[in-house]
Length: 239
Picture 1: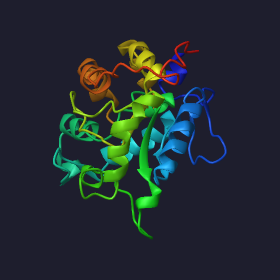
Picture 2: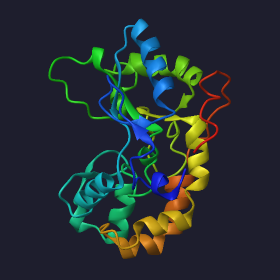
Picture 3: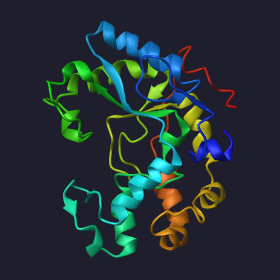
């Protein structure tokens, strides 16, 4: 992937096929649609609540949190008063739940947040929180089905254990054949170039801390497991 694709500054690598509410990397569409069809046979309406996200949209989210216009949470999910924190503390708090613009895996089109629309009661508001995906949660059946089947289609959870600074995200899937290449290619220099002078709130503090951010919040994720399926072998020639 080229630097613009890696940092979400172009949409040329993603497509939005009929029947999906969001865009995916062109090589991830067929395996996701196949997985969606398999889930439907099990009574699950697998849907992407979020997939590709442009740099500009990630910057909007980041800046609103940094300025206290959008909620930020501590590690336990409790609200914080953003403007009462130092810039360094604010950055750390935001990074636990939201990626830095240019550093989001959603920029690649390989990653998506999934829900089961069939399990939702009328008017249910999706929160993308742990309690929705554990036993007794609205998406517990979806989570269990993914545990058994997602690897057949080349998908895995990059934030299953929270190995870096990001909280575990059971809703977040990644298409491994492309994502494993993208994470290697998104190096520190590429990320710094994408951020410089682009209106990201807290830029100076971010750039001063960027090596640590890159190490903890970009590279420190769960590695994709070994996968043996026709979908897992697709997309290895990343363009």
